[in-house]
Image 1: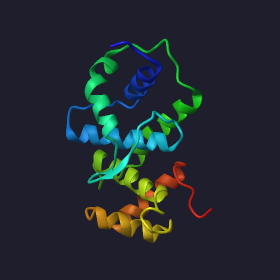
Image 2: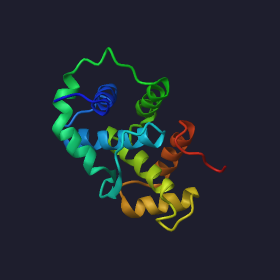
Image 3: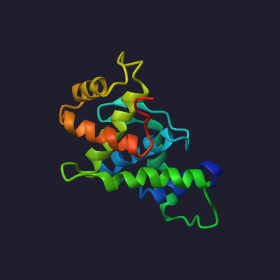
Length: 167
C-alpha cells in the first residue's frame, strides 16, 4: 500500500498503543483507546456512534481490518508525532495504571470511553453532566457496572484531564 500522512500517523499511533485485532477484546480496546485519544484533540478522523459496547467507529474497524498488518510491521522511526500527540497517547496508555482488580483491560477502557461519551453527548441524551445523571444513564445501558465503579472511573477521567468536572 502507498503510505500517505494519514497511514503514517495511524501506524505510529497503533504501534504506540499496541493495537491488535487478534481477539474481540483487542478490537474493543483499540476502539476505546482511539476514542479517548481523539477526545484529547488528536483527531485521526474517526467518527463514533453509540453502540452496544459503547462508542464505536465502523470506519476505524474497516481501516484496521485492511491495514493493520502492514502498519504494525512498518518501521516509522524516521517519522515523529507532535509533542502534543505523544503526550495524548501517553495519557490514554497511562489509564491502564489506574485499572483496579475488579476490571479486565477491555471492561476498564469500555467504562472510561462510555462514560466520557455520555458526558460529551449529554445534551443528546437529555441529561445534565452531574455524576449521578451520567452514572444512571451508563448503568441503564451497561448493567454490568455499578455506581461505585462509575464514580471511580469518573475520578480517573477528571484526574487525567479527560473531563473538567464542576467548572
